[in-house]
Amino acid sequence: MILAAKYARENKVPYLGICLGMQISVIEFARSVLDLERANSTEFDAETPDPFVIFMPEGSKTHMGSTMRLGCRRTLFQTPDCITAKLYHNSEYVDERHRHRYEVNPEVVGILEEAGLKFVGKDETGKRMEILELPSHPFYVGAQFHPEFKSRPGRPSALFLGTDRSRD
Ligand SMILES: NC(=O)CC[C@H](N)C(=O)O
Image (tube, rainbow, N blue to C red; front, side, top):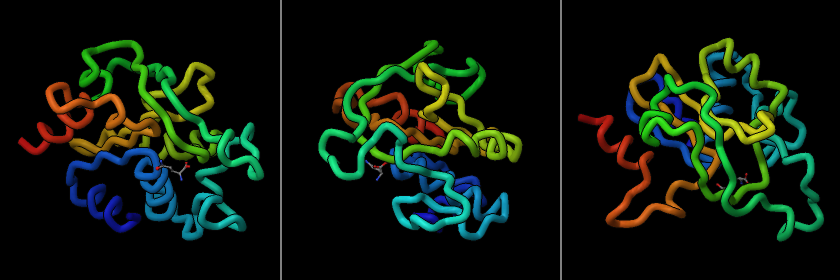
């Protein structure tokens, strides 16, 4: 997955990373662009010196079932000037469903953004990263939520339509 994200990023191939796919794109960016070889998620390396993806602080490792962040949550677009806000009909927010325990470490958002990876969607607290984009790339998008949960055959998610159309 890391190599796929790297290939897509470097070769300007459309990329839509969902949930773990978004987390992977953050790890890949940290390793390749920030040169932090051991950057990782604590899900995969509890000892990583550079934890770019971490267990959500309010979660409990001993009660897995009830600690997952599940269901519909609001994502607020941080700017109207991004691919995903436009795909979601220039809305100021989008409500999508979630299913995860790990998240982008809020403490590393600053260095990622300085290096060009932008978090264009956040939750209502501003601490949880929901959507990322790479403005220097024609279509490189990560979503912490699962657009497939509300997507239907006759009414596909804006993110799937956008990924498809980005190849034209
Ligand atoms: N649904 C997923 O892709 C889960 C990703 C990751 N394992 C998490 O819990 O955050």
